[in-house]
Length: 348
Ligand SMILES: [Zn+2]
Image (tube, rainbow, N blue to C red; front, side):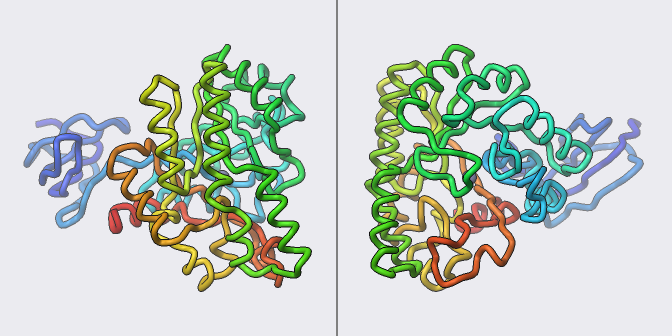
């Protein structure tokens, strides 16, 4: 009779083979047996009858702002939220910690902040900005999973957006070391111009913000990023795609052999522009929440299998940064990592 460390008894166990009522045995932190009515005893037995037992999820896109801005939310509460929501691994972005993750020193500072604090396993993106092209090799050597770039303004002054020149050079380097480049794909000229026109007219409500980031800004930037990746041979990942048109561009490029993937976020699947108007700045994000018709096209592409990953893009800020009459000044970011998996299991 084997004596296990832990036995999880009678849960609806979700595996690649389907959902079955079964027992799970764990030794030294590793699943060692899954079967109906396992024999044996254990140091700890958990009755999971009536509950679903799933593998821990992976959230490929979170911001924990730590070190430097842990008062916005750091690894401690951020990772507690993750695991409370069924996510056991995250990949964390190179902003909005201070300093941003642009070189080996800042990478190591973030590893130090997360180690011993995070309740979830983690990996780190490095940044790709006009300020650190020379620093990409040391980031690669330090162990980043890839390089994240913004094609439009990031919202923090210490993480500048990449023009086409920076993107091109960054992709050439990333291809040479077989690391992916992830882009926030929105056209900066269009979005910055529309924002300044709105503000000049005193139009600073949430609807004005939504209108300043039209679908074409996303579609154009995705197409441009794909063209650069196709030519450089760089592996490209488009973060938080908010439209079915954007996903279709990715799917079409992949079909002709381009190494490109994309993700969307739960909030683009469940909220619309009307929710943004109802909720206000708390629902401000970039790209913005879209209309109901656009949301449906996103579901269609998801159900067709064209979206590779779903992320939270968890991006917390102090309440004071979500207040004020000018929505353009409010922080853009939605805090949703605890709800990613429940929303998908419920709505999906
Ligand atoms: Zn993000």
